[in-house]
Length: 150
Image (cartoon, rainbow, N blue to C red):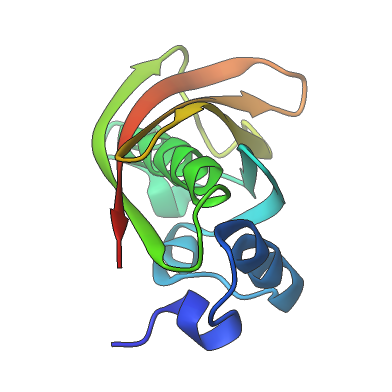
């Protein structure tokens, strides 16, 4: 199977791949399903934006926690991805999410912004926050990621 990065940015570094994805306007399947988009990428930092809606509701009438976790995991992963060479990959080993307030369709646009804490030969560590347009925090996360050769 060919990855989205193999289609739009073969042989490029991680940061170049992220920037190519932003420029192309393409999103991976998860981004399409939950309607979120990578909007910023620089070395050690990544930002996703989305507008939560009823498509992500759980049975009790709020946005499912998995929505916030997915945005935070994606942001942490892309912060690490920004440091990869053209031959490296990564996967999340651990994700710790703290939920601070409920998200609803009335929340409006949200941003998941992640920064890399450290990047080593085998592991990376990142942190992220999910905020609304007024800067209110809805969820935070820390992530441990495995770095490997592809």
